[in-house]
Image 1 (tube, helix red, strand yellow):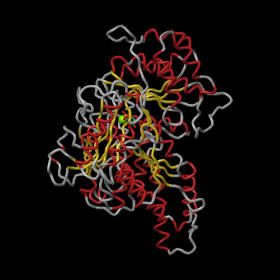
Image 2: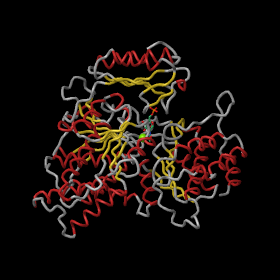
Image 3: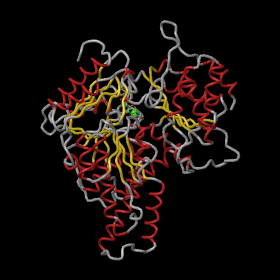
Image 4: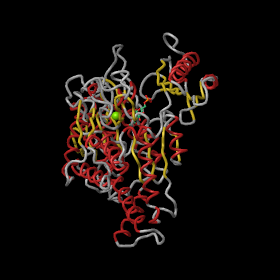
Length: 589
Ligand code: 16G
Ligand code: MG
């Protein structure tokens, strides 16, 4: 590590100042730094060094993506990928923040020295031993960016920072965030990690998942995808090609890609997963208003790490309002299929000793109806984690198969290494002619083998590192095709309780602290009791909470109740309570 060369090179990337002359302070949000793209060069340069130091400490390649996800086009940001393909350890967020804001060479040296102390290593749980443990390889960083105009210059800054401190950098150019996570994940395991390898893997998994499909209806195979005018557009086109190539009997999935242009100002502008999920409206561009209610639509966000499905409301009451199939519905669908497949595998006796633990991980935002469905109807364990992939993913890893989704569409299914070994071993036994279950009929065994192969295929069609809109689309489509389901059947799993999500502006949102997966406010004193009283007045299905946002300077309030009016009224009451107890600004809601 050449720390001296790095600090000297940092002079070319000075920390910008605000109009009052003070240096701008950069904070590490829920998933990295994110702010206006034109002030980020110093932060991104320094994050290049964080990724390089992390690589040196772990003895493995790390990653950095220049993106601001669903934010407007003028913003940009940086997401750091740990050596196992997951999120940067939470403990390193403050190191990154210290380096980003270090006022001079000495402070920068001190921040880097802290990162390198053994007590701060926080090696990932599943780190495969470094290939050259005795003689660690030089640090290496994979770099990618989304389609923002400030992207090329900021990616160059990240590269300069990593190289100045002595890392080599592979610049992969335009990629979705989950693609870069996969590159790091795959390289960690010594797997082929090029884009073509990843897409071929997804396509193969998808094809195999639908091999026994029952649905031949053309309409049911076609989807319209809102690409948010982001990096997902070109990547989905490439993925569609890979699916076509892997298909011997014609294309089983036709994707009509919309909002692919990427003209100036169009990124995430009233389009994309964030808009559709929060507004419960169809994208404002891409001619979605002309589609009928039977057309299955999906929206991805600016860096394609989340997805929501939707369709025009069948009653056609409001032109643009949609029926949403959010992350909760996707989790329920995927968990249902996993549970079905495991049940069908029973005659093979492959997963009984010890029994596989399947679980779903949600956040406080999960609709109460989804939690009730997963727990009571599916009979699958449901855990609740703090908001943010860095909290959900590790919870999901506690299960043998952990399905996690935030309501906003971030999520994936995590099959543990041991589970995949058990699946592979069972397939080997089947291929070798051992039927497994002595008392089962041939039909049961044939069905069990088909289920086992589909389970294996799902492990290939899903991004194992992090939630990925591209692989998410394939898995949802494969499950629908395999079950012979359309949106109506999917929607019939359960009906969402009416809910509202609103923002309250307060003087200092840090006066609110929360516990119990953000569902209970500990401070300010008395606020939770007041919220509880309000909830109590709204009947059996009422639920509400308030938590400080990790990405914006606001407090988020969520409320749900048995009726639309009840949810709206409860949300309004809780906003008033937050305003009163936490120092509301402006008019009382
Ligand atoms: C980030 C998180 C997302 C979370 C959101 C919450 C990742 C990759 N992204 O976008 O999971 O839902 O922040 O924002 O972890 P909030 O704290 O402002 O509600
Ligand atoms: Mg995103």
